[in-house]
Amino acid sequence: MDEKTIQDILYKYHELIEEGLTPLGKEVSVKGKRIDLLFHDRHGIKLIVELKKGTVVREHLGQLLDYEGYYVTPDDPDVRTMLIGNKVPVNFRNSMNNHGIEWREFPISFLVNFLKGKDQYELLNRFTEEDLALSDKSNLQHQSRNLKRRPINQNATKGFNPLSDTIRPSNEAIKRAVESIREEYLKHASFHSVRNGAEEAAKKILDRKNGRMSTEDIKNFLHYLNTENIKGKTGTTRFGRQVTNIQSSQICNSPDQFNKWIGKLWVVEEDNVIRSLANFFSESPIKGARTLLPTFILYLRKPGVYNIWTENLAFKLNLAIPDNVTEQAIDQIEQYERFNSKVMKHLVLPYDLLPQEVDLVLSKLPAYFS
Image 1 (spheres, rainbow, N blue to C red):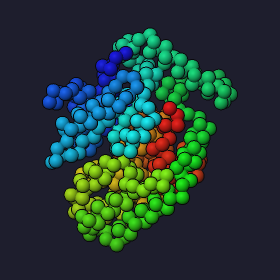
Image 2: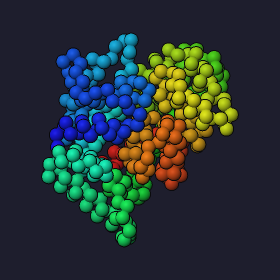
Image 3: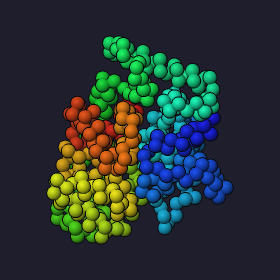
Image 4: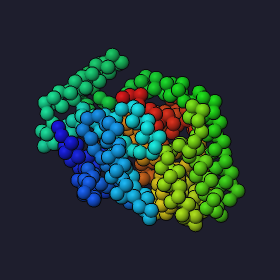
């Protein structure tokens, strides 16, 4: 298998990267450079994708930033970048998460199993015997571990789904991962106090100035939204530096729309919350808000009921706990409701996660299954 094969797979099945993408081209030429894949996301923002066969190394990250520079301008700074490889080392994941650079990992075994499930033999024929043998070996290893964890089910092979049955970790594995995250991150005293304090400060701004917030008020609100303390270090990194460096300035440029839409989400009757959120998703009235801002407002309203939803958190959830649902959600509100329900069912309730802990656990969880 070569890099061109990965490119063709992800261009044809771009929902693997994320839902709602509109393809703009492959091998797009910009000032003599060729971008592997170019999309518009569901918000109309350009997404530059750099693909690498094998393991991602530091030179690949530099290449991605080089391409980004050709698209970013002072008038239009809103460009997303993403690095995709068959394997993304943990140290690179941590660094890219810290700097707000998106990444995806698609092992060869995953791609082979996905294509088998789609009966895409034309693309499968591009894989070498070694690639296919590696996939078969991966499946046998997963099946062997599954047999050790549970009694043999004689009917198990009848509905075998390579995407769920071979990749989804056991409940015990998820439990161990959550416990490890608790030990490494959540037991630090400042983790909860800083998040709770920042969220309370954000709520006070909404309560006191809802519907009439100045640009400075909005800026302060977004600062609190992104504030966290990890292992004793406080910073605006909760949802990535892109929120502070790019999205915040875009949101602050629309104070009237912010006051109208966010003001309504904050005070709307509970029976109309989901309808108001659906209208927000449909209209996309605030550039830079994406799904983070409106669902953060719902989370502040009822932290134990609504979870914060971003494309990155949704990706991490599906990477750690793959869905058995085969049909795609038809719109964003259905996607959010599925995400929220899945988080509650598989993480919050079984492991007694506090609301302030959920997004941190989600962001770290996939690394414990790599």
